[in-house]
Image (cartoon, rainbow, N blue to C red; front, top):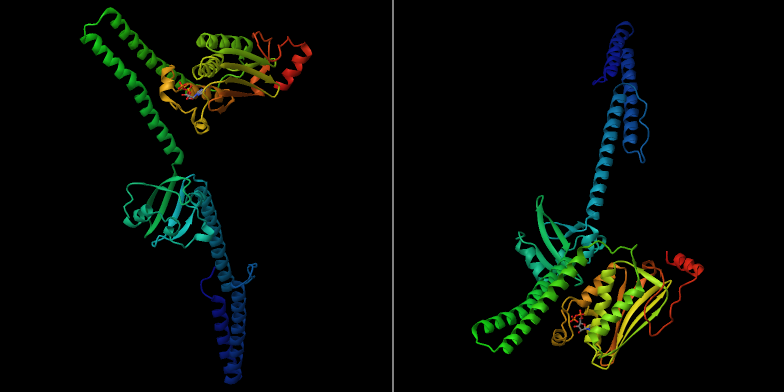
Length: 459
Ligand code: ADP
């Protein structure tokens, strides 16, 4: 590639020599005329190439490089390469930018780029959700137009971002943890994280620790008081026995609380309940009924109704504990003379185990909170009857682990009904119900064909 227009210079030199020769042989005018013609032809040639270059540079959609020889060929070739390289770099840059944006968009945390005046430049979808903004509509607006909370405005103005700020989202539906990261000349990155769930979990944990401490502190204080009395005072043997009995009652209460807590923690950390272990429902119903009668000690009429020849699939100890909990609650919250019904109703599309009582009932407002740990409608009544406030929390955990749900219906003063709903996939055709039923259909041993049908439906 020649860097100088050598050919043009050669032509000019040749034309000059030729014109000089013509001027000498013919005359000067003809010599000049020949030289001028050659020079003009050269000028026209270069002007045409210049025009070509101009058109090519401003080509609308890009066209092929014009075929040229000599210095113009070199110029076109060099320009073409530069053009091609910069287009490739642009494509690469665009791809990097797209990938970067996609990565930032995929972030669960919110990110907003702010300029020196705290105006919104750009951000991701999580930030749109957190701050209730739309970048297409709100870019260029000061962020404080969207986030008007005084604590946020003050945080941004103070420019001290070592600590993160907890602030409610503009719609008030989320708690955000935000911070600002400075970068570049004077740009800022506003980083936000939704901590609603984490805060809720933290609040539950705090409440739980406070509740456990409170629940254990009361019997412990009583126990320590009794111990001091027994040690310090000279007591009659009968008085001493009374104190020891009361101490035992307090110790047992603490024991029950600790056992229930351990049960809850085991349920929480254990893998999902097995779905291939058969629970013989007939036998279990008999057991729950016997326990309920024993607990009631003849103060209530306890009946059992069973319909449907299905067994359950799951962990027997867990289901037994849940059903016994519901039945013992019915005994504890039903005055003497009342009725307690245990009802098992199974069909191919699901089953329910219900405990219905004619007890004190529960006000509507308490029902959604009954399965919270240590939630009681009447603390002293629960304590008097030996409650730990953890029974329904255990029931709910057990049911959840068996894909089941708990429904509570109650009319204050008239009674309550606690219903556990089991899905069809937790049922299997029974080997024959042995429960001593008082109501519902007695379940005969199903004929083989019916059993096959039931199995087909349940699987
Ligand atoms: P507790 O050990 O206090 O009975 P649970 O978790 O078993 O704890 O029950 C929570 C609360 O629900 C009880 O304190 C009681 O107020 C209410 N409750 C539960 N079962 C019944 C029921 N069958 N009738 C009326 N209230 C009930």
